[in-house]
Length: 470
Ligand code: PFF
Image 1 (cartoon, rainbow, N blue to C red):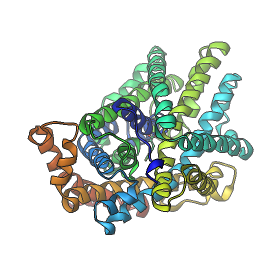
Image 2 (tube, rainbow, N blue to C red):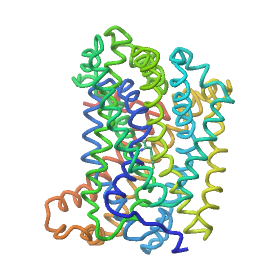
Image 3 (cartoon, protein in one colour):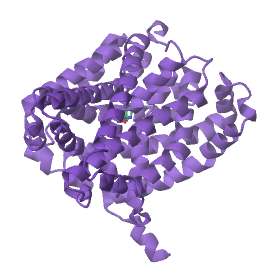
């Protein structure tokens, strides 16, 4: 079984793979529409605060647990001697299965849009509903995507995951910076920038805060043990703290630039009126509806080229994330069931694909899954699963830090973090991490988890109650 475990070749390989996991649809598809729904710049401010202050310590903890134990998220807790805490890992594997089940569907859309763009079919953005309700199309793309994911996970850590990330990550960054520079030159771009970057503090509501935290967790791939798994392939000589800092920075920067790319475009399309972004235009269709309009302005040939490249790279960004999502259940099956990697990949992929079938039907193909899931304020099955998993990540993150600080104990964690970082225990960053992991993260995550669940699933607006009290 030990022979089945892989290893990243070096720290850069690890950083790129983990950043590849973090950077994906969450940054380019989800972040802009969450900003749109969450009130613009106010959401962005909260998101940045959460990423650096609250999520960074969670990321460090996950990587350290993984590297210490060299195990999947379930095995890690057992291996540290706390079998009762393996529920956190089980919960993580489950979250991974659920996230990948719908993520694969959206990734399939992105891949499908690559074909639409290269054939010059920019008008697909105006008939987005027709595209998503075409089950044959959407199903085929989802099968292709799941197979590609399985292929790379099957090839193992350094051969598949690492190689893929090393080439694709830098290319994607260059591409979105260039597109953002272009959209900033479009008429009315400044209105979009104002919406995105000048916060209106009145817009900060409990929903903005909860939404920003959920987005931060999802985007940084935290709370379900992805980084426990990736950390388990990291060498003892590498510095966990600086690796986590680079991953966070890369992820946040890409989301930020994605916003710079999208909002000027929304303003251009709406002739400067940003009032509709929070209602009819935002939502899962945002990038699929807006981006082709930008490519159209470039003319048929250049538009097809730039549009095709954009959606191809977006698909690749999604692929480095789907690979990390599939890696979690795969590592679990390999480690715990003693099955070969290839077989584990097959088992996990089939289960996930089947679980994803209702999500595939949830955007027009089936009335039942598209319109009857008005549970907890969601409009369809896919949104519901996405909401549930967002909350699972918060809960998972909270349990992981509580476990590390109070059960496994800070001293052990510090010991692990000192590997590859000489003198860590004397550094200011260690004091900061110890304090946040012990108190700040568990308390804030706990409070916000309760608030998010109450408001998202039970329609209880805690903010209203608080304003009555104070
Ligand atoms: N972080 C990925 C994204 O932003 O697209 C999604 C994701 C990957 C979430 C892996 C969670 C995870 F464990």
